[in-house]
Image 1 (cartoon, one colour):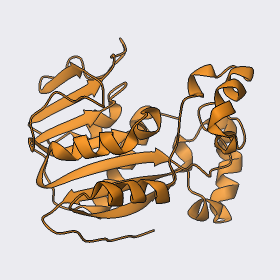
Image 2 (cartoon, one colour; image 1 turned 180 degrees about the vertical axis):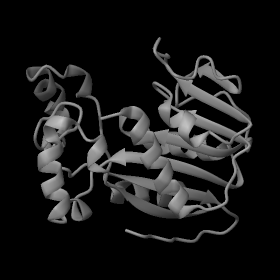
Image 3 (cartoon, helix red, strand yellow; image 1 turned 90 degrees about the vertical axis):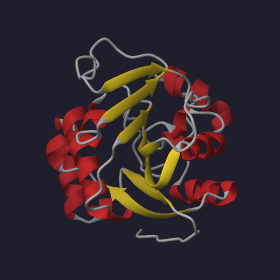
Amino acid sequence: MSAGERAKYLKSLFAEAVRDFVSIRYLDVGAGLGYNSLAFGRDAHDILVVDLHFPENNVLRDVDNVHMVVADARFLPFRDEVFDMISLFSVIEHVSNQEAVIKDVFRLLKANGYLIIQIPNKFFPIELHSGLPFAFFVPLKVRGRFFKKFGHEGLGKINVPSIGQLKNMILRVGLECEFCIRKVVYPPVIIWSKLRFFYKIALKLGILSVIPLGYMLILKKVARWHLKDSV
């Protein structure tokens, strides 16, 4: 799957839900290679990207308005209410205290700013990093040994929340926001070639509209709580 094309698709989902929004200061937490940062920060004046380390082939290194910060998502070194948009792409499932991270990131967001959280679908039958079937149905206590047995030890600590669990976290934290949810169903052209034939069949049969690959949760920071759910 092309990281650049994936980023463009995710940006198109956001653009469908939020129109005519321009971010002045944008923060991407867990930026990785930086493709999502470029797609979502294209019109921003300042792009700040955070990760525990940045790979050598990161695409942001020569971009003038990008500031790269080495930091932990649980301890972000920024003042309150300084960003117009913040994103967490495939990050929440990698952190231990997920509610604390969401609350702290929301602290950094200006009023009327947007927080974007993208997660894989916990109930999708294939784990997309390893190709293992029903991997996240394995109990968390033994998941490390399960992934290690198949040569994917690094995935053992991943804890993917369901979209319902993610919504409940937001309710428990008590964020003052409105939000909508978009299903992530990538176009076949950006799916791995060896899986594309079966993916097209699943798409044609409507399976992916019921069991998408993931979800994008878009939260707008407002003064009054309001729930807007488009699943």
